[in-house]
Image (cartoon, rainbow, N blue to C red; front, top):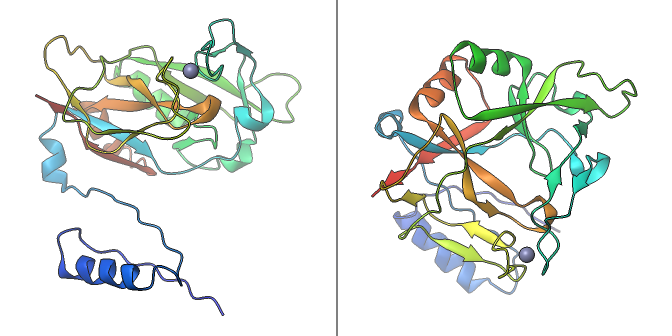
Length: 241
Ligand SMILES: [Zn+2]
């Protein structure tokens, strides 16, 4: 007989202590996972000029299953998994995007609805690039219904301490682009920090060929996403220290 339980508790609560003790005591008879999340009030988030975005909805397979084609001439000589350049449109099953304004594929390509794309344009948001996305059975190569792969042409400088970066067994020392995980809020030095409304981090997070840049947006982009009632994303503060 199996039982599944989910518990959400505050890190500094008595309940957290109880739960940790329980897990320790039963370590050999249970399987468990911890996921740490930071929670902010709207007031706290309004006080930061830049915010890091996590997209929380998936729209099925992307490059992992359907292409696109990559130019691998600049691939990392050690792991071969980073430095690929996408040279043809992303192909997805568009039904998996549904009515979502924002989503990511299982291979971590960022997707935007046509509604969101038009709103970004109308509000003069800067820094992003859009590429048309093809439906998996569309042999004509159109972008119907319209969905866009969204990337940024603006790469931020590297994060600085006290940012906590963790490296997994898959970490590649040569390119520093696979096997890296962000375990804290991001910190940047204000010196030389130049940012657009939509930016990519210099760092790539995750593993395999699809380790992906995180997205950092301006406060005004965040306000626009909220006005548009875009769902499926979370933000956390970016610190300039
Ligand atoms: Zn490498």
